[in-house]
Image 1: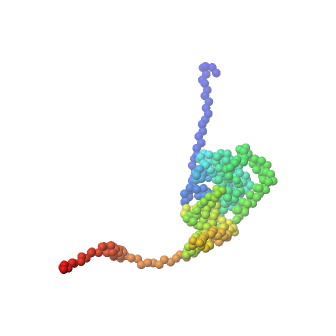
Image 2: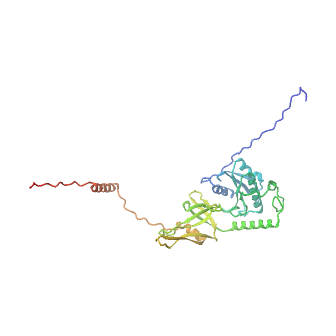
Image 3: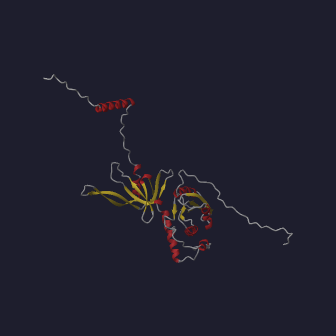
Length: 356
């Protein structure tokens, strides 16, 4: 380059990546919890005619921020790369996320590919600091399968079990785990998980509905969240303490109006109901109560909790209504009577006679 030649300048372009809002979904209740957001998403995704993979991003308080449709596939599969699943969460500064996808067939049983993808997404979330809280498969007729509730995957954030290379490795056409050849033990474990998912999806369930005032959340010693539901006495004249039973907190949901709760339990199963029972009196004459536990069939439990629906309302005796004039006269009489009682009596002076 000579002194007379102009100097060349080379440029490196800057690109800006920003989130763009799409079409929102609306709900009749505040979307302040993952359960409320999942209710809206399950209803929406159950209407899709192809498999669709969706991410619901949560903040550090596990409140929904937004959702992102990651991919739309075919009738029986939806292909999505792991980086694309995490992209919206990273750009939204999410603290956690929930994965959802639908099965247009209506059967929410997870496939082996679903379980494998879930394991990779969980490990990727650990590496990026955005934990995956659950993967829910949406079926038809309000049927779904929560992999966390069914223990089909390890959602704990304790340790990283896969390398980045294993997470991002593309699976071959054969049925194998991404990141290594599938052993007989792995195959047996996967088959057992699929069978457990089928049983969970085909299990008949009953829905119990109850008021918010009957549910009390608590945490067990091992850190698990539960909900204690009290059962009012079926006889209004029964003044003994109410019975109660315990369900996992994730099994209890708000209804669409936000005023009541509901939970689904296996129809053929049993639930332990605790009822305080009077055992007698101690030496001081105080009543001695003891909790008696009984295994109640879930169908009978539903009838116990929802007994208010069949309870005959007590007839109220109509009292004669007083007029305003009658109330005023009664108030005047009452005031006069009080004043007359409080008024001190005048002392009478004794007349003195002539001194003798």
